[in-house]
Image (tube, rainbow, N blue to C red):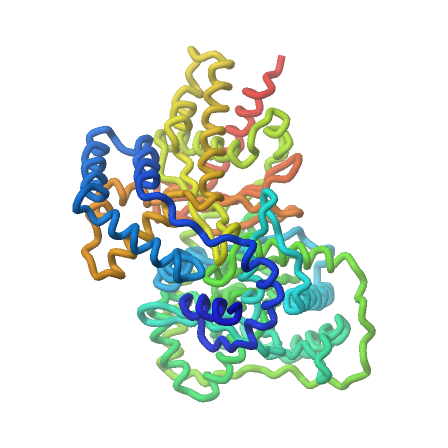
Length: 619
């Protein structure tokens, strides 16, 4: 039953080449939790529609709300489509691993045609290591590879402890799929491939790709010394930088890359090289030194991991379709870039935590006296059409990179312990600060989404928590009013935070509104019905135009996550709260004159200081 259930889920998500043996390695993990983790519920229809109306109240005027209420009444009333679609979702929930996750992955990722860099793939920049040349780079990269392989071994052997949240076990299904997975471009939609018996990784340096085995002939994992010896050989073979940056193709608009992909694979040599990259356990990007384009080291490091710095820097050292890409620079910078169709933030955080703990230990294995085969260099036949595709991709990527504004900062006045001392939720406190900072810059609140995990349920992915609430708006509007007493403002702050805590609790219990609304819309399409007017309403368009995309990345180290905004006139803000400080990244697009990452970052910094003063006034 476990084999069939898991394979059914993978096939629905668009996975290719998934054999039963690829599932068996994780079967022991799944057997621990399959029946203890409940199925994701379909929220009650009336509850979701009421929650949707409440979410609209801070965003749109009353006259538009009247129109939306009428649409909702028609939708859920007698003869309306709502009850019919709800029944369809409930039937779907009974006969699927998860009623929304496969639809969500297909709709949000595989059918999206936007480029993966900036728009989709998140980057995590980790604390700098203590080296500053290529020798230290290769030593650390060897340790990093060994650590990732050790984590894979833990997963494959069923020794990864089941994770818990609020005393409840979490779904662990994504962990076995992190390795040997890759997104495959298509003209209309993408798919995902997962390979079960890969024994190699891909290493890329100076735009040149190498297939490097990481297991010995007896099946044992290579030691750090063996890996280091192989990386030295790759460095010796990758001096020339006049090679075409094939990896740039993966940065293109998905339809364009899908067309180029079809042309590329017509050649046998190209097909073999591409398949080697796709089948690899993961990709290691050995980056060359980069020019200083910003005085802020956090900005530089985040940009370097996120997109490689451009076609004259290290962007050719990426294969953006690959699920896991570890990036190691010569200056001690390093991080991870991941593709979201297969991976989510929490499993990635677990992987990185394992790697960081492993890197503190000496190499536990003795190096066997086994001759190693030279890593295989991957070659490509580049005709005139492919050359043209590469040139177009280079131009488009540089335009995208130049359009992205990144500001990272470490807020050091306080961390998550301050709100805790006042019995306030740290995440909700930061969300209030974000809303207040946005209002100070733009004199309005906007549709904002914070990411909530759904891993309490089988196959659960994510849902949104909507930040703007009536309580949040009331606090924001009165914050700078000198006629309002400090005590009254504190009470409004607590009400705003408690409301957000309630929304968070609902989301974690599978009772949030956005995935349910999406499910109703997709169910109508599935049944061949017209899209209900509720989803054609201007209010729905406004409510899902996410001008503020946020994400908390609670990690055990001073890491910085970074991703681009969801809309051209929006921001993305990611934060990692530590006990006495908070790391922030803020991004916006330069093409929009109304948004500036530096302005929002500076305003957020001052807003946090003001909130600290509100909680702890100085005498």
